[in-house]
Length: 192
Image (cartoon, rainbow, N blue to C red; front, side, top):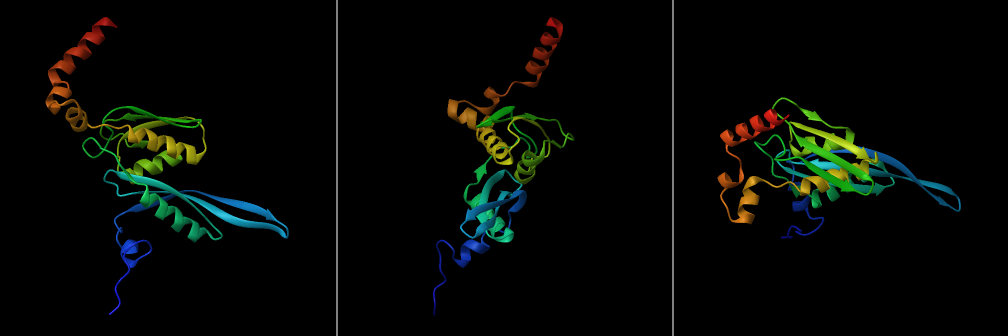
């Protein structure tokens, strides 16, 4: 009786995560010049998520497109992050992410807004499970840098529960009371 392999490349690893959705963001034909001419390959950029608060991205290179996509998907599953979401549909607070020349601004949005974001950022939010968000990419339009900047911003996302735990307080002490928020907005309106 042969034992089923368990570590890397074993059958268990391949079948363990069917709950993840993936989105191909970019595919690029790359070439290497050699003595006899050029050898072509493909580079793929893939975003993977469970649409419940986990997301990751990966890149893969191979001679054939399907193999590059498979490699990128595996890399994305290895590098997933968990992001706390408010009511399971939007961000807790406005955040900014940076990577190289890429800069992105992500803002919370009321119910029914939808995902207002461009290309690669939209893929990240859809795989993350965000339903309402307003995002803007400023700077680099390179999809790799845009995704890295978006992931950088999402890593900074903090839920009221985690902030309260870190500061040794209750969640109710952290969040403003509804009456206090109404009074504060009325004061701002009077001053303006």
